[in-house]
Amino acid sequence: MTSSQNSALTQIFSHRMLICIFTGFTSGLPLYFLINLIPAWLRSEHIDLKTIGLFALIGLPFTWKFIWSPVMDAVRLPFLGRRRGWMLVTQIGLLATLMAYAFLNPHQHMAVIMGLSVVVAFFSASQDIVLDAFRREILPDSELGLGNAIHVNATASPL
Image (cartoon, rainbow, N blue to C red):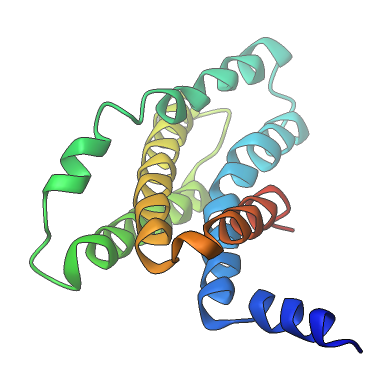
């Protein structure tokens, strides 16, 4: 192994890049859940395609997250600091809302499932805001490109 290959591997598997991998993976899971698992679950329960197609609107919080991102940037929670505190809040919100699906039946609770999906999308979009800011803070300028690439690739392929 040449020294440049060794240097590249050292840089990729550094502490900060491993954080980018982990946060990218956790950021991608809720999106995978919303885009792939919910429609598959609804289809297996014989819900009509028109209803399943309405779930395309779930992506709106990702489009509009710029509206509440200044609030998340300005508000410092009283625990774990500004970024980590919001990470914890969004993770707990995601965990609670994702667990709630276990108690729902698509034939009886479709409106609740749709509302819950919007809440999951909101928490996931909020988590993206915080993770982007956190990544910007922990990575020096020279590592920002690699860190963003690693994060995006870990987000795009959660499973």
